[in-house]
Length: 459
Image 1: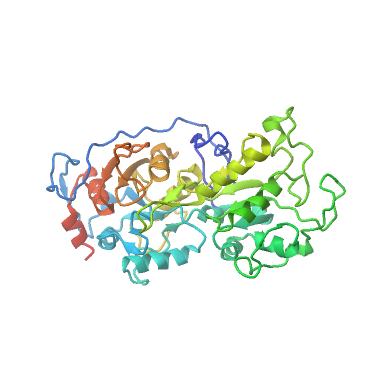
Image 2 (image 1 turned 90 degrees about the vertical axis):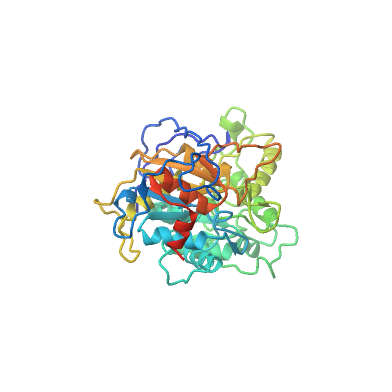
């Protein structure tokens, strides 16, 4: 199990988000320190500027040859995917050539997306296809970090627990979770097949929820008859963690099941905690009786597709859950943990991965845990969502002192409007597209490069 050290500053996403506590994979915390504030560069785009425009960072060296990349060995890139490298099924023009070009220079980079619900290898195949890359090219493989990928590093004692997993395709999510090491994973489909009374509406057992498995170890979803009794049957189902893998499809069923577990006694399905509503307890007694922890894999309210209006993501499901929770509890806070950008956990994971990718990789091999791995001086996060990509990079403070610089592209979620001239979370630079983002970053490093030169290197 890899060890990741938190800088434990609170991102302040909501008053209810428990981001300051360690993830199950983490062994220790360090003292907190305030977030770093990145100065905003005024540079907007390199698309139509000469190589040494006064509006861009000053360049003083030439684009290095393949054999001379020492000057770039201590920088790296983190790319968001949706809205940065493609929109819908269409790749962003120049993204393919740009990636080939920086790969040819042995530069370090990862793909850091809030997307999930699939295996990392499936995302590699999907991204390769949309960008027109051969699956055999060493440009994307082993570099994709999904919203739930950090769960791979969670402690074995956590993975041995019984977890509820839900998402866009729960059975697919379960199979991936099994590969991660979560052997006792249960889906909402399992529950409604095990107890027909759990959900009194059309539960789609022959369509959306047709795939199910028996509950682990002969457990029962209908063993509890009196919700306040503490004489629990030995086969009563107990859930230890709730993992929202990515944006669910059946919000009604999932919200019902998650609610039932969050008001339960110690995570036993069908029970009710006697502490619920007790004003003498923290949070009026809600979620104060050993209920399972709730993990949301990402907080993206919207994301970008080919449709002209942004589409709802996992964050929208969370907002719906919070609304129902507030109505049930008369305004009590919903306690939950967040992964994905802008979560510290996810940036820690990505940072560690970048450190483990030695800058002079041979054939794309990962050199994990090498003591002689080249340290990082600066990482450029290129994203389209100010609320996740930009905020996360601006507020991230790795313990090794590496600077994370955010770059916002105009091809995704954020667009300048009459009412929003600037994003809420200000990036280091705003550029037209991901190619401009790389050009800006390299010029910021003193490398004399323009779009034509960069793309020619990956043609």
